[in-house]
Length: 479
Length: 119
Image (cartoon, rainbow over the protein chains, first blue to last red):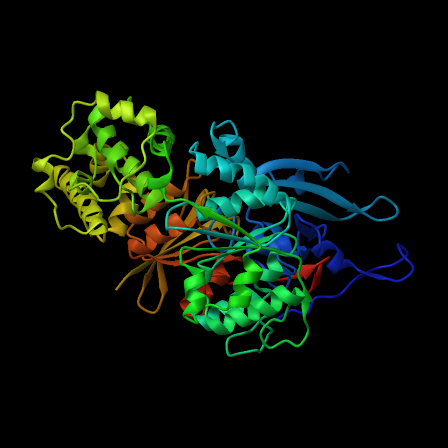
């Protein structure tokens, strides 16, 4: 473990200032290098982006820490050796979590009083969000990347910008697959905290002890294996937004700790008596009924009140009048482009099946269906046989509200909707099991036809080799 | 039993990025990790896909590399290749640590200096 020096800035104000604290407050990732391109310091945002702490990186060549494409192909520091100007470029980096992130980096020299270069300053900006927005900002009937034109969604689109601009805690509720994560991200992107970090914590994904250390951080030596100070997600989200998804799965003891934080905005890492004042906006989401959980004693009433300052309820897809058609078109266009398929669209019969289905998995399920059928179809239009077979089962009791356009589309259809020939099939099948089974069977079939040659099987399925590999791994198909 | 190990290279160091490496060192080791054969392959272009193909066609058992995207990491693990990623420092040191069974993913093995002074 390396103990870093604590430099001070003198002569700027009457008393010396803590340099690292100042750099830590910047909303961009900052890397300070010496003239040999060795890391002297990195700030909290860079730590959140790269996964390297200042002590891990201290004295190491910058290309081993930043791990940017520009570092290898055209190092900005080397290309500025003769001049004192700053260089800006777009590149990408691979962080410690093995994620490839698009970044914008600006490199500038650090000069002494005689204009001699004493080091370099690199600022790193994560441009994932802006790239995504650029791609999707022209999409009609949408807010950031949420699509919909039903009256229910229009009401939400009107509320979201107002809520985003305020700094209140927000509770997002809705069934699984309704887009709670997207809404949380959209709020962050359109809020004043946009340039700050957006940190997501899945409260249901980790055991309690790990979750506590993950959320609040820990002090070196707090428990066996705590060999280094860990800042915790709240500290990393400083000046940004923290998104607590599946908040209903948070244990009662952590609910108390979260409540304490919401009261005084100070986090105490595990094993530390020194608190840290954090400025974060909290967005929580759950598919559970928190009011009911409060009655059952599973969720603290006071925590619910604090989180529930503003509430956004996302309606299930079956209640979103007219949105299914819009979402089908939206996902179809995006997958058609991604998969480079020459398909014109869905046949009337297919559309009839899709518009009549009840979508218990909501938009996620619809998206999967469109992805599946676009993948599987080898015709110019997607026919009913290209749909997952469970869709062609008996009609559900839950009816979807059709828009006039959709009703017209159904009337024009000559397809004998959900007739006996289909209803006798797959009657008692579990939806997710059938979905998986079909995909698995299709892959195995393609592999059999191509005599085990994955390249040919992938071509036949209209997928890339890596997509086939991923799906084979997912369905545990051994080569 | 022979063991084949590959280290992606950037001059004398482990390449900081797997997908951008244009040089790989392949070593064939006999019992006791004695180097029986050592060859360096210079690739015509950097490509993670091509590198994965090379590792599979050469029947490599262990890979030591720098940053690698999760997709390729999982793929190579699935192909039963032992991957030590996020390694920084001289390849010879990384190999030494691996042969002593002390190498871990994420190890920074390079000398640390700031303004020419060891830290």
